[in-house]
Amino acid sequence: MEDCVFCKIIKGEIPCEKVWENENFIAFLDANPVGEGHTLVIPKQHFETLLSLDEKFSSGYIQALQEVGKVLRDKYNSEGFNVILNNGKAAGQIVEHVHFHLLPRKKGDNKRGFFIA
Ligand code: 5GP
Ligand code: ZN
Image 1 (spheres, protein in one colour):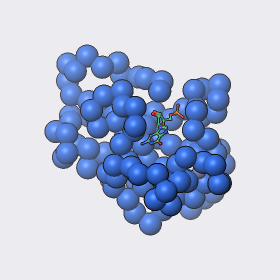
Image 2: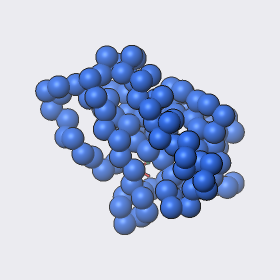
Image 3: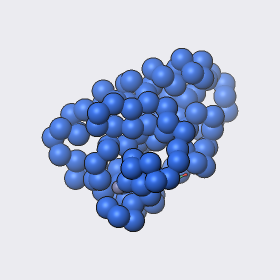
Image 4: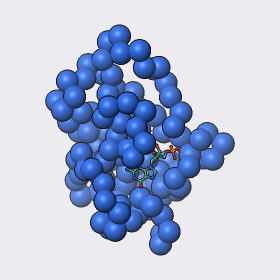
């Protein structure tokens, strides 16, 4: 997708602060974080929503989230993390390239347990 901002990040045309990657997924810090370590995990191929992912990418996604969760735990000493996906415009999806938000959490950090970006 030529005008997709996340495809541009994948191609290196827009810089990002990379947290983790494998062959099919990349994780990078959100440009407008709701808290320290707010990270986006995206497939390296353009799919608009969770429902349009093909089998290869849907089956690998949970494993990618696990790996990023471990990196965030080690990097930010977090005790837990929230996982959010805004699926579709009505649900708050602004960037039309499917992405999970991961937010590292600590007990008593006063962040809401659920957030919409
Ligand atoms: P959505 O509302 O679509 O679930 O969230 C999109 C997220 O992408 C927002 O949290 C926004 O800050 C983030 N974002 C949008 N453009 C960029 C960008 O160019 N770089 C990075 N790192 N994050 C972006
Ligand atoms: Zn894209």
